[in-house]
Structure formats: structure tokens, C-alpha cells
Length: 87
Image 1 (cartoon, one colour):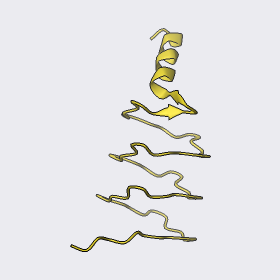
Image 2 (cartoon, helix red, strand yellow):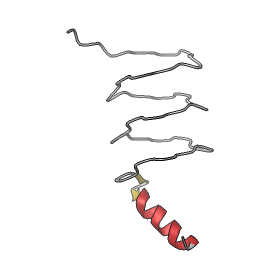
Image 3 (cartoon, one colour):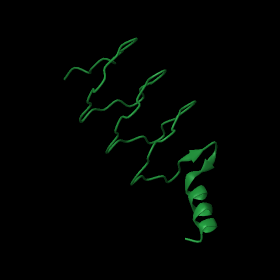
Image 4 (cartoon, helix red, strand yellow):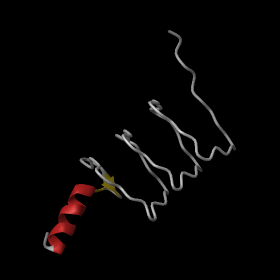
């Protein structure tokens, strides 16, 4: 079977696009607008997010083991937050 070539999309608009059962490891998203998008059953293992806006974002039912924010493990942040709240 022939290996697919990398997809390159530049300076385009595709509102309402759907990606189902798609593999895109090693992809680069630069200057991309994903506002109001939904990500479900998505593998972001070892992904790097730089200069991102997560205002109003909701992360639910996520495996955050090993994930960090500015070098601080998220699990540590959540543990300290829970202790502070008395949970």
C-alpha cells in the first residue's frame, strides 16, 4: 500500500470541518483558529502547546498524568487546589 503524503493546507477557511478516524501524528498547527471546536477521543500525548488561548475552554474526563503547565505537573496543581478547597 502506498504511504500517504503529508497534507499541507495554507491560508484557507474550513468552518464546520470534521475529522473522523484520522491519524495526524507530528502535525503542526500554527496560527490556527479552533474556537468552539470539539475534541473527543483525541490523543494529544507529548503534544506541545505554545502561545495558546484556552479562555473558556473545558477539559473533561482527561488523563492528565505527566501533563504540565509551565513545567508544573497538572496533577500537582489539582492536588494542591483540592487541599486548599478541603476536598
